[in-house]
Length: 199
Image (tube, rainbow, N blue to C red; front, top):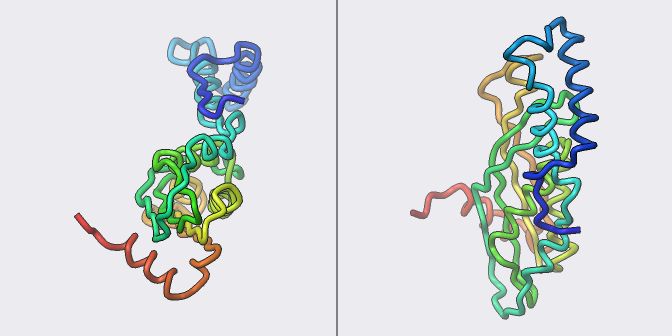
């Protein structure tokens, strides 16, 4: 499996199958799929869905292993404000926000761009925010074997904003900590740094 595989070129058989299902959905809500504005909508929607769920075809462990380097640095490494976009598995509506991730190396560091890539791999699946947080946390912890890992995700959910309770300004925050970040002092340092503007 190519860890960087992207669906810019689509699997025709899968796309046709998904396209047919979207056509049925559009007809089911009472629309005319032969109308000019909708003729190509099933195909566009199928391609969009395959792109938005391409994380199922990618291996986050291989992404990390491909850029691990021996290094004696053993202080905190933080990447914050990582944009993420995902689909809620309950309503298949988007949720979006930012991830803040830190790890404390234990003999190896990883290429900085690989951590946002791992976020994308897990976000581009049908998800709930709680599991997304856990998936990222455990992948980094199991693969890098650091002294500690911390993940905080802040996201807005369209399933709460445009339907249901329709709360436009609500933000959901989830977090996970392993290793040294389970200690109050280390955790507080991380939380302080992701909350501050250093520039």
